[in-house]
Length: 388
Image 1 (tube, one colour):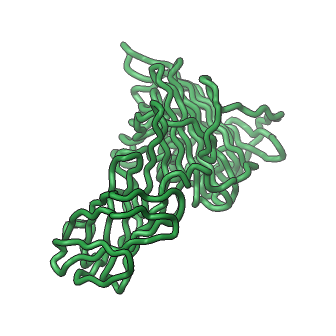
Image 2 (cartoon, one colour; image 1 turned 90 degrees about the vertical axis):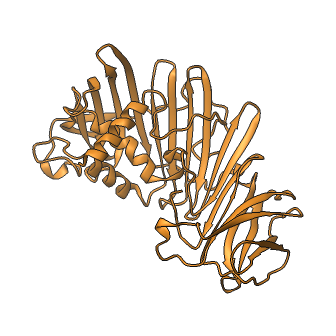
Image 3 (tube, one colour; image 1 turned 180 degrees about the horizontal axis):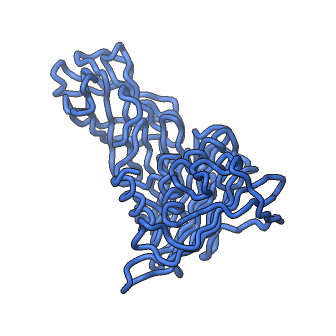
């Protein structure tokens, strides 16, 4: 494992102390269910563990060892195990729940999808220093929707082919965000095979840890038990440890559960609360179309920052540096309606049209950005999925 990845995982375990997640934001929001719909969870954990009769056996063969476990029974590579988990559950309707915290500071996260990893829904619900916060998201292959509710306000973020910097990867990046948290849990302890468990008609390999990993100096008194299928699907983890330095350590407990019989309900109802805007390049590249694909109407006098490129070669070093400006709608944009933007040859002046039109500037890629007034938009077209 590279030093950079080790450092990232170390930070992930540290952040679990407060928020149970890497790169977590601090904006309070609405309480949400695994599909992102509002619910009435109590001030205690909204996750309710399911009790299932299980039978433990000391017998386990090397052939049953999950991916990432060496022939001596030691979990040698947590990343391989977590990758195998997502491969084993990719075509199933599942809900993964992670609860972590110390004392009253607790966070519960859910990650759910149907018979493919996309679309997916994710939630974050917790309490830190007496402040309740929660967020919900729904992400498709191209578009993303995140809902925040706090202090009697509801805020949204809508994206196309992009994620907004500084947001929580658990909500927006699917397995690429969730994998760091799962990996961090196993990375902190010295997990080894400890027999098998028969539960619900499945044979699960039990992994246990009774001390921290040697490369985690800030973790002490680690105790953990995980149940994993031979193919790597992580069904449950119960772990506790002390985090910090000798002078200042805090006890942390983590609980992870996987529901492989979950019903995928699809898009949460709140996705239609903001205007569902979509950006595309039309008229052989000579115009941009901004369409309201659903949800609420876009109000009149809404201003967008517009960025464009007339070529994408080498775009990774100069994304949207060719031209930029601002456009403002002069009327509301109802669902199903569209407006069109053109630019002069030098990309220095924009014109907004109600009907399709051709301008002088040829767009190879473009971005629209809007911040404030309850909804943040970051819409990219022509470049595929971007990380910023």
